[in-house]
Length: 124
Image (cartoon, rainbow, N blue to C red; front, side, top):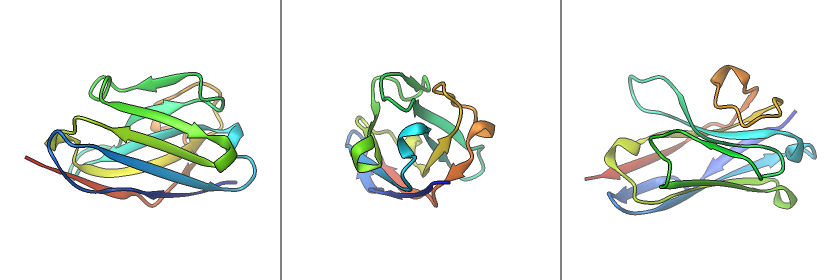
């Protein structure tokens, strides 16, 4: 089992940057595929990026390709999401999640463990 805690959210102007962190407890963090999801009011939760256990394979949603970068540091049990060129439509609660699947899946149903979320607000 793994417990996840997100941090780094906040208010930023359009065009700005934020870096989210996801800290994991437990010694098995390195065995999980990890993902960043977001959910805006009235919308379904979507995966914006996923990364396999080694960090070598990543998978991005088209809406964030070229702007967001997912990474992980297994020695620190931490995953990151660097968000650049932010847009108002990126406003959402961002969640990190862990999956036992070995591919960089972006399917919500394949994620077993979730953090509590952190709010990101991008003003125009």
